[in-house]
Image (cartoon, rainbow, N blue to C red; front, side):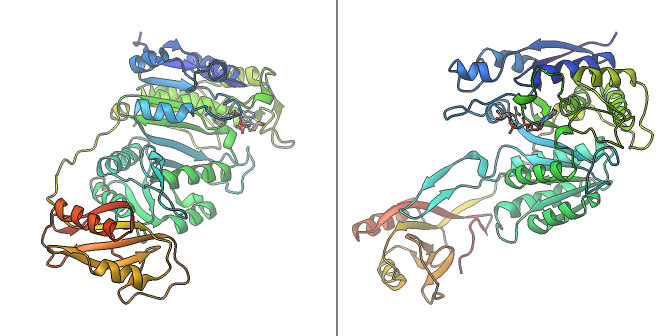
Length: 481
Ligand code: NAD
């Protein structure tokens, strides 16, 4: 008898308990070896005043089992409630969101009958750190943070996923024609890591045209890896165009814990009527079984489910006269899948997880620890200035210096306006004054502070500084022109 893998489950709200029961019935019947611990999450806890939607003691179970199969929850209307997914992502360090987007034509209506792609979305970085500031009367700012270890982890994960799931190609979406440093880093690391996987085809697209191609010809994509924001948006686009939002599962993978769920919500209006389709959570549980090393069971469950779809046994949400043969409830659907365990689909692609290995269970870690030599060579000083005259602000700043550190230029909205600036249609009240060393030699923080002091003394409102450094001689800041 195989050893049982400890997992934590939560039945959630709305249709959650029904689809969780159906999922557990199916995977248990297929032979999943699980030691299940149950925790409470969701609406009742929110309403009790626990604003994270999860009992503090429940984390103990999650930290012990490290595997979370989660049904959807209802977030009560009104403010003050924290997203449970965001909290779980932060507490458990879930760096990768993996969402297969598959069409099941002709059994489920879709404009894209040949679609079988997986979006691997970075889950912790980018604009989602939520670091925002109001800088001036007119201008608000969000910080986009991309790190080398974060990018390495997600990109390596995408290639490992491709290899262990028999996928042939990994595509990278980013926008390094504009964000040369942040998205540029993501692209560079993609190229570095791709070279380690000669058996997997790699390609990259600027996200705008890549997204257009994905929405038009999704059959040309296999695994797509991307930073957080693009991944958030495009994983919904991909699930929607597959025609099967209600059928999609997703995995949130961390270095020490992972969470598996359906992508849909708790559909409260469908609750307690034996109506809901358990397929999204079931496919989430298939990803879980692969992840915990029960790949043979995962394959059995997935193939029996595909066969059920093919046999026209459908819940109300995908039932279609002429295509479907039998309209069933949640329980009967689960029974139909259980009856087909051991069978394969005849038209749809048979799923084979035999290549999935233990490496995926542990996740991947960033390897590089190289530290570049960093030298301070200047500073961008941002001012809140409501005057509209670049010559005035530029003229004043040009009189200010400290040792080898002097004004290089003034910009507004990313366009150089002094000296010899482009005439621009309009300015904001957020001005960047770039001071650089005249000889490209390093300067000191004391020089930076002296400049800030002089600017303040001249009556200007300094709102922030960004130090300008080189790393092994390479500029660590964008050019302004
Ligand atoms: P939803 O996904 O719950 O439902 C949208 C519609 O899709 C429903 O009206 C229903 O007709 C249909 N539907 C969804 N899943 C189905 C299933 N398995 N079987 C049959 N039909 C299904 O989205 P919503 O109505 O916007 O949100 C309801 C609640 O779920 C909200 O409180 C929301 O905050 C929450 N939510 C939770 C999660 C999560 O826990 N991961 C995700 C999204 C939304």
